Length: 90
Image 1 (tube, helix red, strand yellow):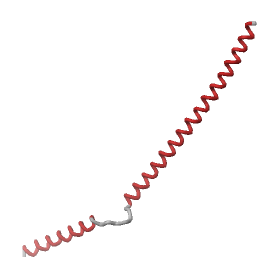
Image 2 (spheres, rainbow, N blue to C red):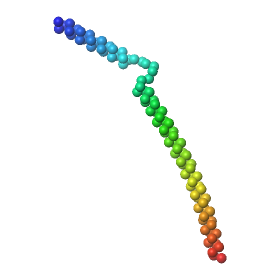
Image 3 (cartoon, one colour):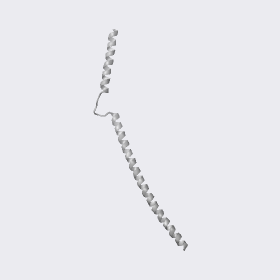
Image 4 (tube, rainbow, N blue to C red):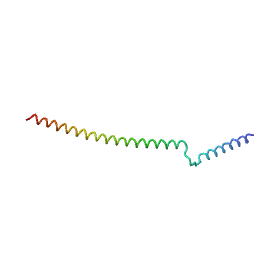
C-alpha cells in the first residue's frame, strides 16, 4: 500500500514538472503584457526626452535673441547718454 501511494505521488510530481517545463519553454510570437507595458514606457520616455530637448533648444534660442536685443537697446541708451553728455560740455 505504501509503494502504491509513493508511486502516485512521484508520478504526480513528474507530471507537474513536465507541465511546468513545457510552460517555461513556450516560445510565443505575441509579447506578453509585461513586454507591451515596457515597450510603451520606453516609447513614452523617448518622446518625453525628445520634447525636453526641443524645448531646451527653443528656450536657448529665445534667450539668445533676448540678450541680443537687450544689448542693442543698452548700446543705443549709452549712445544717447554720451550725446547728452557731449551737449552739456558745450
